[in-house]
Amino acid sequence: MFPVLIEIEHEATEYVLRICNNSEALTYDGDEYAPYPFRFEFHTNEAGAPATARITISNVTQEIAAALQGLTTPPVIRARAMYYEGETFEPIMAPEYTLRSISIDAHTISGVLSLDEWAENDFPGDDLSPMTCPGIHV
Image (cartoon, rainbow, N blue to C red):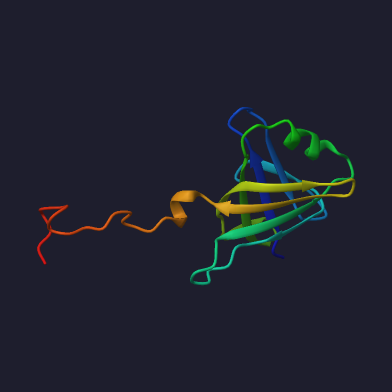
């Protein structure tokens, strides 16, 4: 089984929403993830493509939508793809995203997520040359 564990948190609150796309609750690293219907598409690692992921969460209870609509800055979303067998979890990937855009209707909450901005910047950010950085020898 390959469940995805999602944590949604915001700096302004102490509350962390933990959900999993499983039929029953899962406990990982001491935290319980409630079963909740959602679809998650991880980012691709294609050269030149933006590192964006997508999430679609059921909005049946309106509870998550109400929490997200009250925020003034974007929450952080951790997505953990796991291999799960019996009581053993093995992480496959665990990126941390920032919610960049959101669409909410009566049935679903859809969002576009991006990796932290530092991960998208070229390194180094400046051109290094002997004139700008005297320690470099060409």
